[in-house]
Amino acid sequence: MLKLRSLAGALSSNLCRLASTAHLDYSRYPSLQESDIEETLLRGSGPGGQAVNKTNNCVFLRHLPTGITVKCHLHRLASKNRIEARKILLDKLDAHLNGEQSIAAQQKVLDQKKSSERKRRQGKLQEMKKTWQSRERGENEK
Image (cartoon, rainbow, N blue to C red; front, side, top):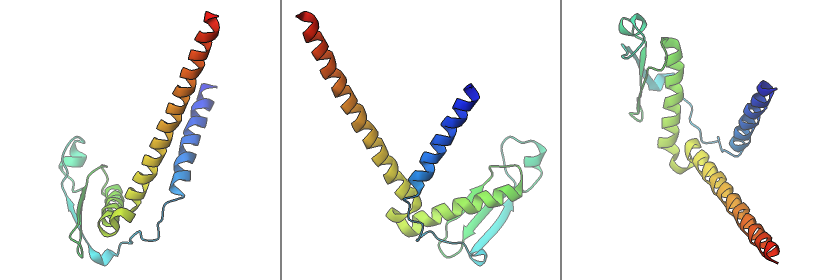
């Protein structure tokens, strides 16, 4: 039963995220041309043993038209790091080109609206609770 509840909670949180991303404008999201990217594989650092110390699995990308650089060493495999580095580069490129209209900025605005709405609801609930408590105290004193 507990697993089912946690699964339902995870599904509802994922649905909320999907619903909030439905209002994002992806029309200006950039696309990468492989000819615009300079890729270099470097040796990474940190934990991981021989897979890190003796192999070139850290990916360094440079977007030639804008000069934006990304270094990614999240995984032990270079193939996964290449995919991850391109995602990071796309996000940085979107923020650079679109500014306030970037996906990250749009998501931030939605999160702020959601937070302010949550605070407003909590304040309203607290106010209702205070009025109820004062009403109860008044009836008990009679």
